[in-house]
Image (cartoon, rainbow, N blue to C red; front, side):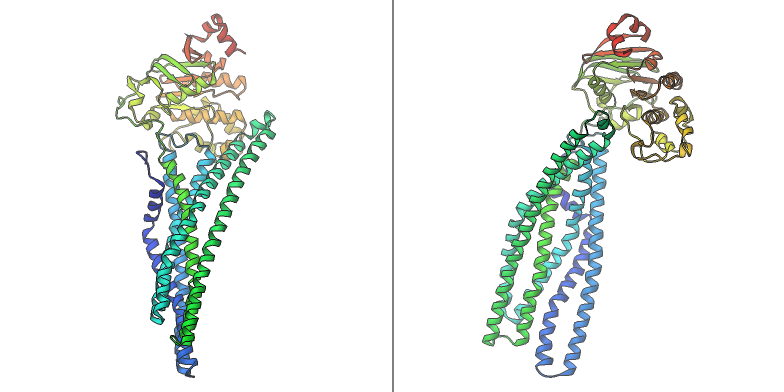
Length: 565
């Protein structure tokens, strides 16, 4: 789905094709239901002509049995069809959610560009459900058309003018319904966009609630969300008004059409062209036509909203990848030698850096943006605008992104924990549940965290690990990164919320655990920098100093101001 990506129409057709058997089965049952419903007024007309008018009890009993069979069949078909269509809609939405999940999690990235996490969640839930509803609505549309055709055929047998009136009147009504649905489609798309943005802002505010309270920015956050929510509400009201106008207009058109059929039928009965029973059947069929037309109104509205949602889903599926997959391969044994030449991206300006295999290197970035951009480039979440990054002599740009990340693990400062046990969180980066995580727990001091919990490492953590303190979350996240045991590990500020005694213990244990494997600590922590083999200083996006921590502290005033204050 990364090569060009599907259009909204293709997304819609794919959702329907994926449930074609269910749609076909439900459509057949729906047509049987509509056929039986259309025959009810016909049978009532026959009862009047053949039983009531003649006084025949046997004919009355016979047609009453036929009527009972019709009601049994139509009710059974309706229940079964409704169950199948609901299932088809849910399965279609589920398939779309899987496609969206696969695109968002694709190693090449790019799906989240310019979109808040809450917005992606809204697309994967609300928009996917609306497209799935189209797959569920289609059998109703097919059965409604079948009901109209059956009614037209029956009316032709009763009276050619009545049948022709229905056959010739249906196409213009359907065309008008399509034209009337276009404003609804446009406003539905805006409604979903505003609702998704509001969801994204809400999720963003909830995730940063503690920070907002800490800096006293609650009112500003509330004001921001209020404005976003009001925009979403206004779009929803416009879409609701458009839906009301759409449904009202369609209902008025069908009402006029049915009234015309009734008037023509009454005129024919007064002239003696049709019997009283046939007039009753014709009027009954005219009233029955309201059901198929209402179904078509519903289906038309679902298609209008579904097309708008399909366009939004297609935009995510067709998102340009942040990085492209390469065809180069790494050596069988990765030593972990990194080489950066002229790397320029964002806050980085021509960074040149050599990191030997098995070394422990500290990186001090005076600008946090430079640190963030360096991590993104090393993890190949983005490719630098200029310059190259090599691992064991192979350019990262020539490798598959997933292959890069299997060799280079970048542990971001804001790494989130999962709603699972502490042990499951630590094992998340390993190949399976058999990995020995005790060394990683000890090196990160997460073993102390486990001992303080009621069930130890089996204690369940809440969403994003909020049941732990900030320092405890950092230690568990560090344990997860260490347990993965990648040839190259890049860690960003892993101990900012940890006390100094524990931080010193982590520094010593981390060096011992990672001995022989390349490790980069992007941090300003003196305790961590003190155990590194060397420290590289980035100032104004470029390397300005390179040496051991004690030497830089003694000779570089700017370094001291960043690290020791």
